[in-house]
Amino acid sequence: MIIECDFLTEKFETVKILLKNFSLYLLATLILTLLIVPITSFSNLIWLNSMNMPIGIKIVFEVLLSDFINLGAILFLILMIPVGLSLIISRYTSRLPAISDFARYFIISALTMWLVLIGTVELLYETEVIAGNRTSIGTFLHVMAGGLSGGIFYKLRYKMFA
Image 1: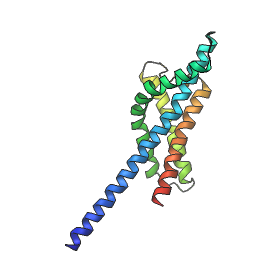
Image 2: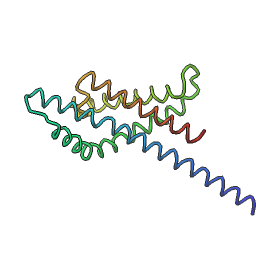
Image 3: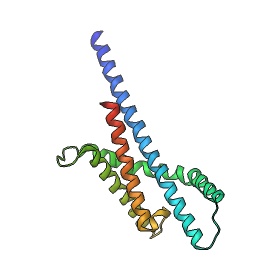
Image 4: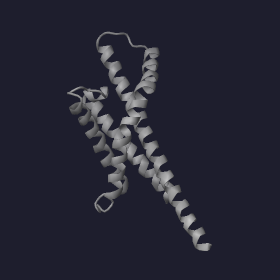
């Protein structure tokens, strides 16, 4: 009876760890989405302003809210796969001695976001789906958002499992 109880306790601990990691993964994807949507929104607003359309504070908030509702959900679902892959790659490259764990998660997540930006353009016939990717600054901000997402995941995971 004691052996069965230990077995169940061990399985319960494994499930708890999996649920914690999965919730952190979803949080990292959500953070990335929350960082990317405003970049795209402001890129579109800057473009509208360059076309001599008057942009007021009301329009800014309407565009942000609309993009969070419409683009945010789709972007969250799209980003789940690359974010998951970057976190898995980061975890299994821990044997690289010359780089800190935080930097590894940051760099791999940033590179993954960069590949997502390139991939969306190439896969969709040279179309810039993520509007902030139209400029070098927008691309840089997206890549940094990817890095921050991976870094935040690492910091939260480190605190949770330390």
